[in-house]
Length: 152
Image (cartoon, rainbow, N blue to C red; front, side):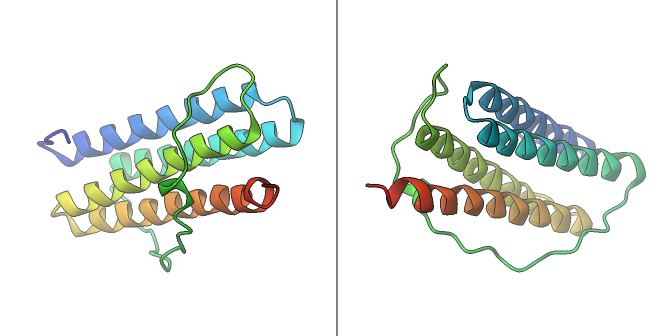
């Protein structure tokens, strides 16, 4: 992972990661033929926008008022599914796999960032974001379990 020399560099890196997630979910939504699934992925893009805005607020105002919630259950489905790539006519199951993997990577990013900073308030902010990303992953795993694994 990159070495950072300031809190602003860490926050910029995290905001860039959130923007990549926004772009990812927006692109995934455009590939969905089912309007309901398109809306699900657009909703995730909006959530990632709010994460980016929260990080920007921390950077601009030094506001770290984030409450750490309980850890989120992990079904570990993302650990056992085969990687897939975003293609034009993506199957629903493959879209869920992509989303699970993306959220798992985001969780690891925020966990690592929280471990690498000595600023206690920023550490807490990254832990909160890690929990939110793990919650997103759980939503995709539950969806995968309900609509993909049970059909097979």
